[in-house]
Length: 369
Image (cartoon, rainbow, N blue to C red; front, side, top):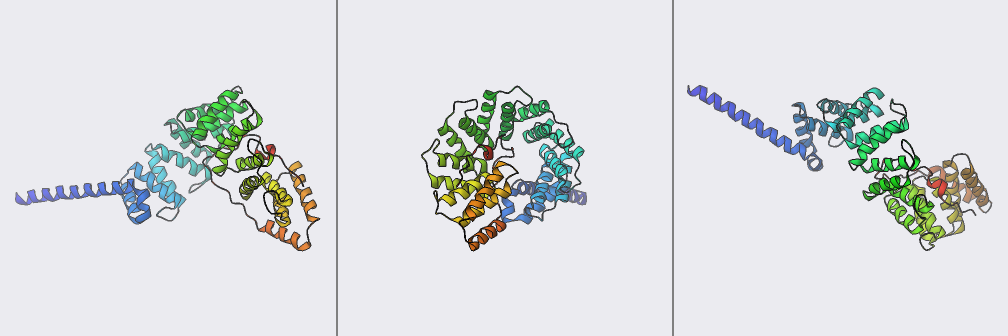
């Protein structure tokens, strides 16, 4: 009888130890983001054990580690496996991430049908990013669906009403362009403002453009500058270009060639053709910067290369010819070398939304020598 009691006690102790271990793993896996910095092996081990026991949230965390190469070597196939396990248990975030894996063909064979299936499941669970994702697919007619602005509008609105800033910006654009709904400048501005208040850069930029052009609001250069600045300070290149133009042309701010050159330079470094063109001009004229024919020619070459066929490219090529006539062969060779070796340095901004129709390349003034 004593032996039976001892065996039972040992079993209780074993269960208690296992429960304590699971609790420790749960704590470590839940705090994985912080733990990965100090003890990545401990974080990965904890999440792996819980994932193997079928915990969906741990499977999601483990998948993210392999997806991002955080604490482990990046492995999209392993990430997709764990996303799949969590997604099958109904985890909406895992379903959305699995959509991305199938959509881009990361860790799995690219498959629009599978991608759409998992995106729809996540959207049906009211995950706002998934709802917005469906809106984008239907708006653009890609990912295995036909273009349908009405359906896109429905999904953008669902996500926007949950407070998703990128979806709010998308919804504003739909109202601005009259896609899926009658064109409505008031509604467009309403949704842009909601998104902009959350720091969504394209909404801030679009509000700036409306005040700049007087579209749906009274023209107000100072207000345009305010909104361009908000987006420009987040690294949004079209806003940086337009802010530079405002300083160059004294629109909404006192004329300041040095500020204009600063903002042109930031946008040009990201590969924006209009900014490269304008920066070439200010270096040629010595406006806000020391006159420098080599830099002027370099930026003009890059502007020509980055511009599609048409007036902008023709203007850039003409400027190259004008500048080259004042340069020595050594200066011209140096400018051409710098242009060949130049690489863009894009800045990731808080948005996945495409810029508004009528980009800065079309709206910005192009000074010429």
